[in-house]
Amino acid sequence: MKDKDRFSFKDQILRFLLESENKSNSISLISVGLKSDFHIIYTLSMDLIAEGFVESRGEISANKMEWRGDHILLLSPKGHFFLQEEGGFKRRLIRKKQDFFWKITRTAAAVANALAIIGISIWAISIADKSNNLEKILLIKKIINALNLELQTLESRWC
Image 1 (cartoon, rainbow, N blue to C red):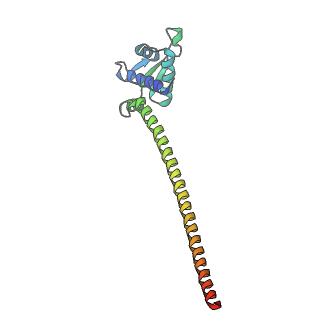
Image 2: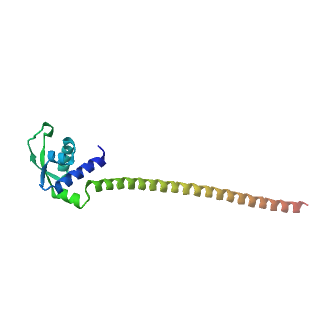
């Protein structure tokens, strides 16, 4: 089951418990009310109990064999707060997706930053290499000029 479906079912269970006239309901009653399979509602209800959003008031005897392990459930204050104030599992899924995309964005920005640093470094080395070549050319020209000057001086002495 995908997270989206799982979270949707959990929100439906919490809303069913919140909106029901009888504040405690059995898992079998919830599965009938939500028109879903008992085993799905049972499994997700056990998750909600483990997370503290729902309290179990005990196991009850089952009318049908498929409803073995039926429990009486009551919405806990934590579950009420989670559903009403924090937006429930739907909001949690949205936050999870936002966190995922934010991590991708941060990673992409870090990669772009690293590539920019590498590019700037290569450019700086290239410029430094060109300036070294220019300095060498200027030095060679100075040496040539000095040699030409000396040659002229020597020519003027011998001629």
